[in-house]
Amino acid sequence: MSRRTFGLLAASLVVVATTVLVVARPGADAGAADVAAAAAANPAHDAKLIVGPGRVEPVSEEIAVSGEVPGRLRAVRVDEGDRVSKGQVVAEVEPGEYRARLAAARAALAIARAEELRLVNGSRTEERDEARAAAVQADEIAQQAAAERRRRETLFAEGVIAREELERAVRDERVAAARHVEQRQHARVVDASVRGDERARARAAIALAEAQLDEAAVLLEKTLVRSPVDGLVLRRHLRPGESLAVLPVPSPIVTLADVSALRVRVDVDESDIGGLRTGQPAYVTADAFGTRRFPGRVVRVGEMLGRARIRTDDPAERIDHKVLETLIELEPSARLPIGLRVDAFITRIP
Image (cartoon, rainbow, N blue to C red; front, side):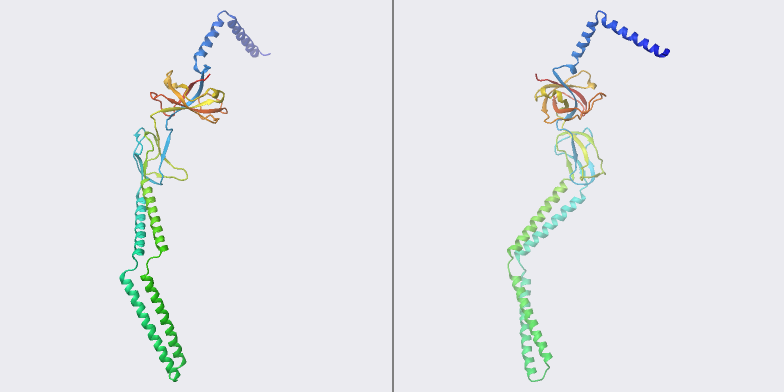
């Protein structure tokens, strides 16, 4: 055995002997009692309390506000720390394209209404007169063609003209007769009243144009991004001039929250869930506030176990254990930063 190894062994024996003497010495029991008392004074070791890590959040949770229409941001009217009211405009998208869509929809509606009015009113007096005159003219031409055909038949019978001229006259008569029929039908159409199917189609065209106008107006209104709640601006994500996307995932412009009340989301270990009920008194502490306690009560107990979402700085923390999310609502006097990690203590039900 080397001298170095022998020396280390001797030192270890000295330490062990010293420890035995200290434990066997009178008064050692008093020291152990002090340790037990200190442990009992620590709430984390109190059997009457359920302890778990938590994180402070607003009563509304965090709300990421984005636009509903894509485009370039014209203005962002709020900044971090500003208080906003429900319905207040927090940002504006460039409205030029959507104003043009609205104008086009209005024009399309005007055209559809004019078409229906034209069908209801029918043809103008001048159009009716013109159609009648064309029918009379076609009738005269047909009579003239018939007379010419009869004359040519006589001349052909006398041997004055060739058969080709007679056939041409017969053909001209047929064409004139057909033209006469066509003009008479046109005159009837001009004089006829609107058909039911035509009126139904015109009304449907108006309904479609009105719907498109409403859609264009809604899209234009959506260029004004409004706050959904009364709350506080926690973070601003975009600035004027940046592009706003809505697909596939909307780009948040600002993050808001209703901070009129604060809650703490707590991860309760599965071994402690048997003592959880809504309404239980609780309190939280945070390293930043020393021994100060912020009281509250349990307002919600989760229905399904899951993995822990809140991480602490304890290197020995287990990450594979199951927890039940529990919400504690703090008293109105509590003023804690959103997102602050805290330790939660819930009075256990016997």
